Amino acid sequence: MAIPPGFRELTEAMGFAAANGPWFEKIEDGRAIRGFRPGPQHANALGIVHGGMLAAFLDSAMGTAVFHGIGRRAVTLKLSIDYLGPGRVGDWLQAEGQVIAHDENVAQVRGRLYGPRHDVLAGLGVFSLLSRKRVIRTRS
Amino acid sequence: MQQEVLAEDRPPQGFIRIDFDRDRRQTTFNGHIGTLYAKRGEKGTADEFVLGFRVHPHMCNPAGGLHGGMMMTVADLVGTMGGGTLVGLRKFLPTVSMTFDFVAPAKVGDWVEGRCEVVRQTRSLLFTSIYLTVGEQKIVRASQVAKIPTGDGQAFGKARLAREEHAAARS
Image (tube, rainbow over all chains, first blue to last red; front, side, top):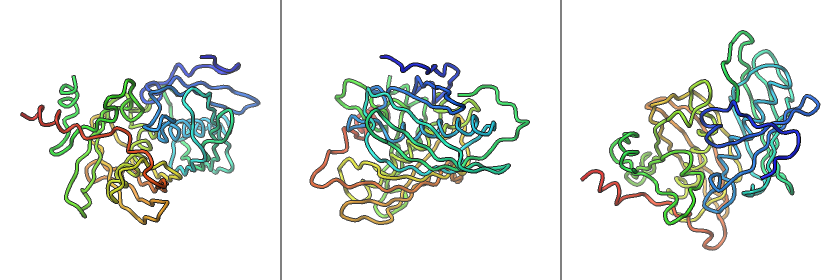
C-alpha cells in the first residue's frame, strides 16, 4: 500500500524493529516523524492494533526525537502511556516526539501517536542520554 | 514444528505454550512476536499466573539486548491476561494507561517471567502492578489501568493454554 511522500523505509532496522516493521521516517524542519501501516500481524484479539506494538512504535519515535532534537543517542528509562483511541489495521499511523527539557544525562520527552482521524496514544518519557563518545554500530 | 519450538525454548517445568490464534487464519501480534508460555500456580500465591518466554535475536535491539517494545508488549499482556485471570474475568480488557520503568536489560538466551498483582478492581477498571524478571533480577516495573467492559464483553480472544500439545510433548 502507498507510503505518504517524504517517508523512507528504515532498512537498517534489526531484530525486534525489523520483525515488526517495515517502519518509515520523514525529517521535516529538523523534526523526525515515524510512520507505519499495521497489518494483521500487529492486531490483537479484537482486530485493532496491539497496545504493545503501539507502545514500541511510539517509544522508537520518542528516542529518535531526542537524537534529532539534541544530537544525542538515548535509551528509555521511563515511559508513561495513555491509550486514547484504537489504532486501525490498514491505516497509516504516525508518531513523533518532542524534547521538553534535558540536561547532560537525561531528557524529558513528550510523544504523540495518531492515525488519519484521531489521536491514538499520548506518551511522556524520560530518556537516558548515552555518552557522546560511545560508538553505536547501527541505528534503527 | 511446535515441538521443535518447545525444545528450543526449553520452558521450565510447568510452563505451557499459550495458543493465541486457535482456528484463526492469520497470526495476531501476540503470536507473531514469539512463543509465549504461561504457568498456573496455587491460588493466592505470587505464582498463580506467570507468563514466560525465552529471549531470541528477533526480540532484540541492535545492541543485542531485549527490545523495550518487547518488554512493554509482554508487560501489557501480563496486566490484562494475568490480571483478568487473577480476578476471574474471562473478558478482553482493553488497556487504558500504562507506565514502564526499564530497570535492567535482558539478553539472548534469558528466560523472562512476568507476574502481576491486582491493586484494585472497580466495576469498570482494573489496576495492576507488573514485574518482569530474569531469575531474581527485576528488569521492568510497570503499572497498568485496564478497562473492564460492561456486559459480557468480548471473550479473551481465542487464547488458550495448549495443554494437549504439552501433554504430547512430555509423553
